Length: 114
Length: 115
Figure 1 (cartoon, chains in turn orange, cyan):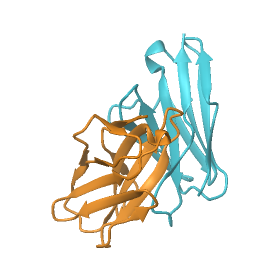
Figure 2 (cartoon, one colour):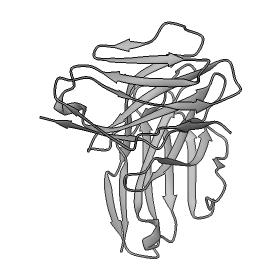
Figure 3 (cartoon, chains in turn purple, green):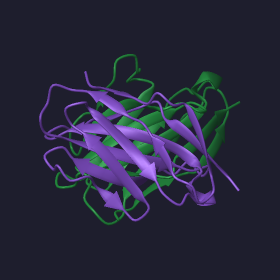
């Protein structure tokens, strides 16, 4: 079974600064998808960014970008110019290319300090 | 993005009663729906996966007779917690995707409290 590891249970960042959340995964597949989901205090899960494994270019969405290292099976999320609204739990997730199931990491709780 | 609506947002029920949670995809056809349970400050624990018109596939350790899942249409799945007990109190989340979408879209979650 695929496993997704987030080694940072908690992180904090000063407002307007940059923070990087780590994620590693284990798979024998060559084609798959990776995601970062955000769960704010409302607990509504929101997709932040996704990456297709066959794409070498790192995905970016405004202030959010990823560093996808396929060989190292690493998928980190960089949040630039952190805002108070970025405070949330962040979950890294994996899905096989032809699979249905999503595998979630244990999450990283991000605190943004004003 | 696609919208998934989950209802109710919170429910309190008496021990021994059953409670139904609905999950609707509002603007797409959800060929697959997922039900998760989430304990405080923990990750999502997959309970079951359902494809429209088929029986749900339950994860190991999840009692299928206790957590009844129905996915009778492409826009609606329901989770019924039967004979609820206080240990069933939790946050339940549904998500859905169609066969073309890469990601899954999540409902708002339901806080179940059994007293």
